[in-house]
Image (cartoon, rainbow, N blue to C red; front, top):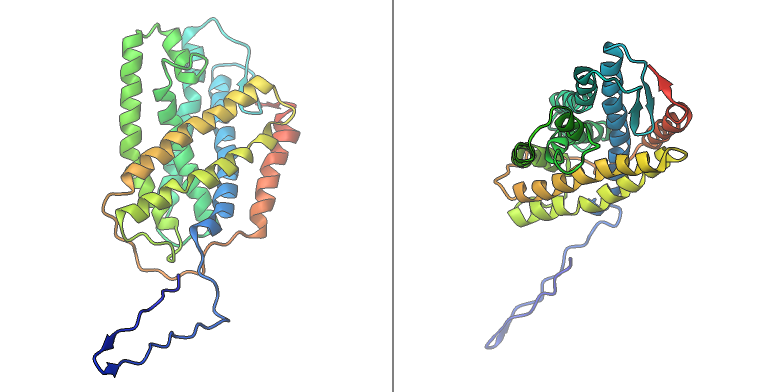
Length: 293
């Protein structure tokens, strides 16, 4: 912002006013965090839909391994229930484990560089995969239809033990968001101020806006599906994301050293829109009728 400069007068000597430096009108505008809302929202929606499919695919692979003939739908895996407790437990555990593996692999592939769109996809795949796994630990005693709730019911896990699992999941989520908050800060353009803890916390807090936009972009992928299943599917994406941004905001105030980099700001390539549209089309054309495994 332009600053108004005052003039100092000393007895009989008057200093000449400072002439502000002229700005080059042809210079490119400095990108702000608001300019990142589009890339962040679209990359989140695309990555989240991919992560959900991989999660349900892991359920389906586990079901196929024990002799079922499963199908993957919109935000759901379907198979004929088995009276064998061990088989149902394996299928229930397959999804969270698949999410965790997805998150860890994408985390390993991620590199601390500039804000390119492919790295945003890797960042979100890492975050959504890891937080999905930890989120299922947190909701074990609260969501009986969830994967960990099913495991607790199958093995008659005492409620007190379930709440201990919840506490452990919350603690792990808090710890893991330390490096995840750094991952997010590393992805920001060089023009975004990150010098003070307040700057960094503000940058993470503003992530709520593109996150909510991206959450709305999940809805088209559920059109025509079972309303209850789609609702719980999107709710399952919303809950861990709320905790993710909240804990990341707390951890963003920790000491942070920014690597020197020059970049032209956020870019949203055309293929990003095509990628999102392709994933939504896959949900509507392939998963809505059911993908048999």
